[in-house]
Length: 147
Image 1 (tube, rainbow, N blue to C red):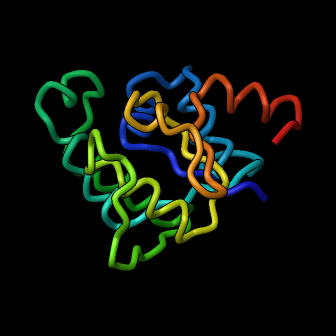
Image 2 (cartoon, rainbow, N blue to C red):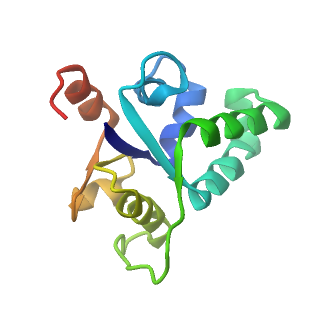
């Protein structure tokens, strides 16, 4: 099964736009229905997701209470593989070192893909065995069994 890391913006996008590509990827990771890929994350990413979901401007978009956010995070923890990233960490995304956590998680988990629209990540394209793809490209490949 293909292992994927969704960056924080893709998780947030999935909640704000339930009919969008990010949500389709999240659902295909076994949150509902048939599991087509395995979602991989880390405590560092989960912490960032929780922080971003609680930003006032983001809360206005998704309308969730703190309790519902907590339930969602628990759902992610139940359905995703959570890896511990181990220091020392190599600097990969020089233009935005905060994004290194996505590569560290993917590498530690043996994930094949990071799904993102973040230009800092997309600019790298590939690092080791990890490719960075936009959601549209990943979904197209998944639908065509080309992963």
